[in-house]
Image 1: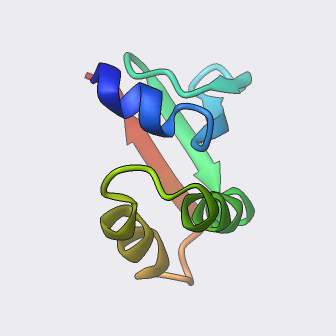
Image 2 (image 1 turned 60 degrees about the vertical axis):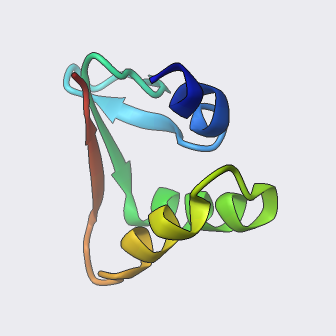
Length: 74
């Protein structure tokens, strides 16, 4: 989990928490990222190329009709 945060924490940020606030990715909570944010995340992944980014990019690009995606904490 630490490696994921180090690699992706600055890229996957600004999501909406279940209380409506926004902030850094909360790995112990619920985070929602809009389609617009998803597109920005895809761009940043392609620029910064953290470990395994291709897999995440393909997953995020798979459904361009979605409203966004969730990161659900542990």
